[in-house]
Amino acid sequence: MMDKKRKKGQEEMVGFALIVIIVTIVIVIFLVFSLGKPSGIEKSLEVENFLQAAGYITTNCNIGGENLNVKKLIVACKSNERCSDGADACAALKSVFIELLESNWDLEYYNGHHLLIYSIGEGETADEEEIIPILELKNGNLTGNYQGGDILFPVPPERFHINLKVYF
Amino acid sequence: MVKKAQFKIQQMTFMIAAVFLFFIIAGLFVVNIQFRNLKKQAGLLEENQAILLAQFLADSPEFKCNVGLGSYCIDTDKLIFLMNRPAYKNFWPVAYIKVVRIYPESTSEVFCTKENYPDCNTYGVYTSNVKDTTSTGSYVALCRKEKIDIVKDVCDLGKIIIGYRAIG
Image 1 (spheres, each protein chain N blue to C red):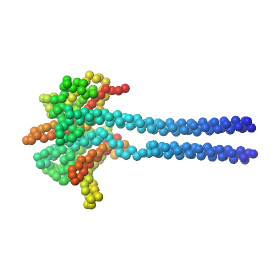
Image 2: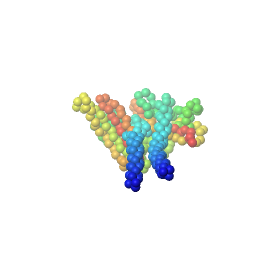
Image 3: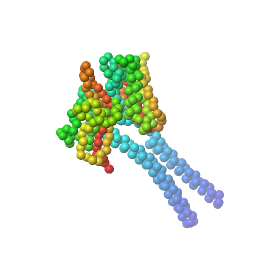
Image 4: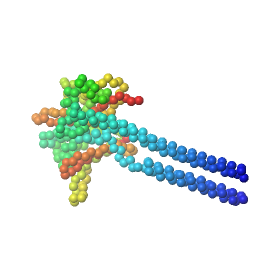
């Protein structure tokens, strides 16, 4: 009699454990689907607007009698050109972006920023594309959350990208 | 026999209550996490909406740069003649519009007038009588025509700041 009772009790406990396990599995699956979606880059309109507007800025680098804007300076840097005062176009580009990043994304308020300018051109074969880095700037602590933006401007046959991630 | 059945019912009731409680707690946990995401998304959408409003205004014919320069660009030659015009009193659905140059950086705020233009950095375009306001801004390029031998576009980086009635 006692054995029968104990067996029944054990069966009930197993049943309870099974219910708990099933419910836990269901909740875990639900959480994985609802929260586990890859968030990817948090695209920021502010960062993209900054990059779009920065492309127009007139720089001190004069080539062919014209003070180049940032977009033209990027193209000049890619072609290893020099400004009329003898300065390297890439050095001029770097100093413009250092100033821009420091004045707009102050590291007192943000953890860090990562700027990458690169071009994508035709590779050796028709299907291939070649990525050529033009300028990379990393400042501060590049960990934690970030907001990013990427703009592109075509200068056939190439496409130029300016990519900025701001860490906070 | 009756006592045993009652005990069984009681046991069942406790069991159902425990499972129910478990579901409630798990549900609350999930709702809490979802709600936190929702709040974050709402904040981001509100911010983006404000940025888009600033962008919309910057793209209006009163501000926009001439043909050849695209979006995200404000013609400061237009701005200087647009400031505090009574004809625009109820034209813009905002509390105030201010445009500030942020690159090249300046040490102090100098309001623009027809006399000191372009050696200034702040354009008070429009101010209404609305008192309780909050503001948002969007990066724009500030371009003007300058004649050094030939007429050229000279662009700086700025922000269009829109003030609107604070809600809540």
